Length: 138
Image (cartoon, rainbow, N blue to C red; front, side):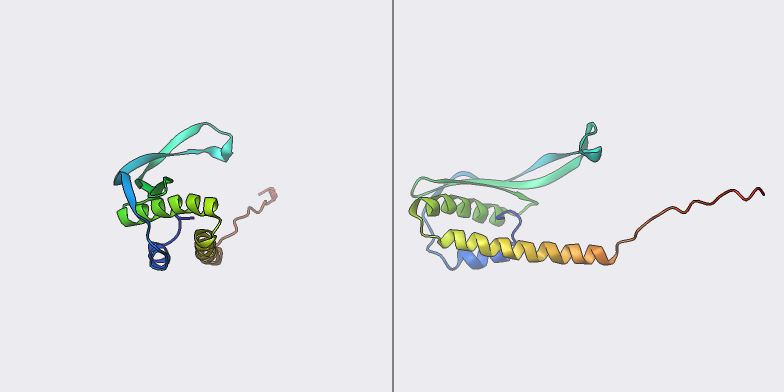
């Protein structure tokens, strides 16, 4: 959810929490990953192409390590996602629920966006079908 959520939503929630002290294990950096596909999920695997990703690793003051990989080139997004990842782990230990509630809000936001994309794609859907014609002997 952290990687899929819009940066503006991460920023909005980041502004509402007490920011932890942390240290960089791996500062945000760009890289590339090879995307693979398979025909019908059972066919031979083939390389589709590359995608740019940004990764980041942090350790928050209480010891938890947060890791993030975000599609695209956005260092801020990767850093916030890694920080929230570390905070999720801390939140589960302390059972405060604050970060868990933020993740639930992000999940709803991502779901709304995915549904909007799905509806837009559905509007342009074209159903193709074949009509068979019998030979008329001509």
